[in-house]
Image (tube, each protein chain N blue to C red):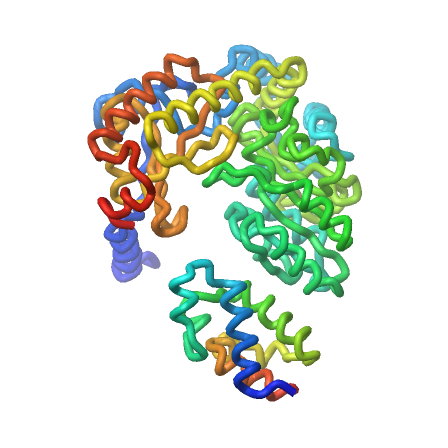
Length: 85
Length: 415
């Protein structure tokens, strides 16, 4: 199973590739960058992020756990994934 | 009184915020018919002055075409003014069905259903044909009306980066398990004037068993060799499952829209689409106008050919003068200024010289991409374009942006 750092790197890479067009902005991102509250990922886009994680790790994240708060940073997302691994 | 002072104050504060953010939209009053030459009152109360219109969706110059006006007069006499009913009670005339047949023929589809507007078509279609077992995968720059339609539908929604086929393919793979998949795009994108890669999208849809949806509002009537739309231009006539389009732009410019495509999908809209079920359809006078427009366009490609020539002339003139344009070959020609204030100042100076073209800036376009969106028409003659070009050059010189790169303009005016 991937360790924490590997998980975080995979999620961060996906988020940057999926949502960040500006290279400078991409370089400034880290595991704590606010994604939803920072306006980077909207509620529509959360759907694809959730699906990506579910497919990648063969898990199922219940809708009531997939809250904007739980998806608000790479660190928080990894905490969420680990609950279901 | 329900509408208390505190409620009034709340709205007044919100309006003030819009105004102080520089986002307050003001209408300009036109005292003439819609055409290349118009009479404009702006700001409100100012003396009416003549101007050349460089920002209408009147791509084929049909808005005030004498044959269309004549047909509409006759239609008004024969079928009256209003229907006072939705379609399925007593609001369908023979001419509504005739228009549906003619549009089907023109677009090369299986069937068509009319809507009060294309906004309504886009708001109604997804909810009518999809459920929560399905997914909609849309280009990130689709029109606002599609976004609203998506919001009204219970199917899952995902997006792909603008015109990025690799990203679209990733998304089709990600959602492979969904019952139905619909790939959603504009045919020609209204802000940048670029054309969707419909041929590649149709291939991907075949590979991944997805339906293809195209809003061809900025294409129908003039894109493609005979003006049928982006599906003709991209060589995929018959392979787009759902086309929505408007009669409010090139096809007469009055109002109305439609869903055209697979017969079962059209029938599902007739049974379930709420804007169709709960609103009167297009007024009879407008129907007779659109029928005449389609008759004229089907008989000759003269107008779309003239539009193509005008567009090439305009693009070349601006490029030679040293403006930065968004690349493309459609009659939507954005002149890039990057800075919001510069775009507004530029537009005002143009108007002083008798040229009517509007500045677009955030949130209508992304930050740092402010522009004057010019739109060419078959109603323009070369003298209109020459006069407009002279004005653009005069104002361009005044702001010292001719021959300057994007970076140089941003260095001077900011983003």
